[in-house]
Amino acid sequence: MSDSWKLTLPCSRAKAEAVSADHPALAHIEPPPVFVASEIDEELDHWQIDAYFEGRPARIAIRAIGRLLGLRDGQLPKPRLVENADWLTLSQAGLDPVRAGRFYVHIHNNEPDERPSVVNFCIDAGRAFGTGHHATTAGCLTALDRLGALGKRFYNIADIGTGTGLLAFAALHLWPRAHAIASDIDPVSIAVTAENAAVNGVSLGNGLGQLGLVIADGTAHPAICGNAPYDLVIANILAGPLIALAPALAQITAPGGRLILAGLLSSQRQILAGAYRRVGFQLIDSGGDGEWPVLQFRQRQRFGWRRPIRARGGAGQPTGDFGSL
Image 1 (cartoon, rainbow, N blue to C red):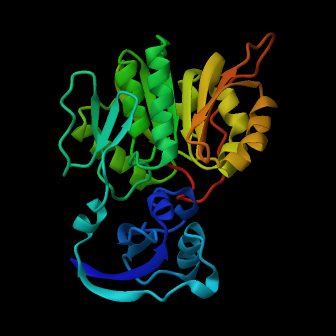
Image 2: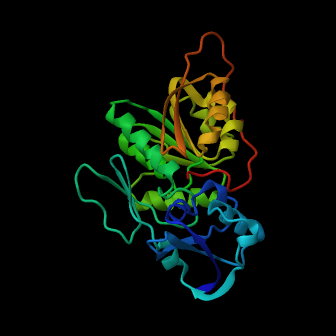
Image 3: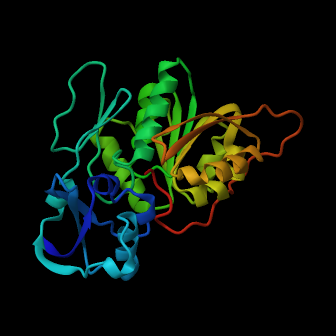
């Protein structure tokens, strides 16, 4: 139990449903706030968001949340101190299970889906990015599920900016004989991924069907580059780091390999697709929920001499900019 601060903001139901600690616009807030949505008046569509912070929130954090809810600076309330907040309880409040293709993502308070066709993952809200509740993560799960349903096979998989490890877990379920590696710039995310792997029965290691974990800025790690090229690369980060990483991801993706990108807004789709087209990728599919597209690329076949891949490719992004959404 510890003291916390609470910020209460008015909004509509649509805005309340769109806000979560996984939202990329809030990735800089550390530790992330916990959001609890409440309906005030159904007929008038009056809702409110209570944002709980571990410590008094900075003005920049309050403004970021206000912008997501469509509030101007002059409409932002002041936070107030709340004594003895139970953070574990708050962090689980209001999180419904998420369905994406065959995958069912829930917190430990929810019962798993026992149907044999459903793949359950227990991912609690907490210290890392990527519980499955944001549209980008759900969209990536759907894209992976579709590839599995189409009978695609992958044998060497990389999840760059893994967050909680969820997307890497899903990929290993679909292709259990693959080698897989997951990275994140944030050491906390890698620790959380290891914890989640134990909860979900994912074996860690460097063998077939196992998941290797590394702390890395982008692809800048000997283990990532040493195991390249990959026939499937996943990166659910943010548009800025994704654009910066385009040459590095091109270096580690095999000719004909697939690349799944998410974390961008629909307004950023064209510039990001152009950045990847310039380094040899072809856009072959676009999914997601409209506002948060999930782009799938294929690496074009290369001909002639190619320099060997080396351990470089960091995007120089601060901690918090990487991690599955």
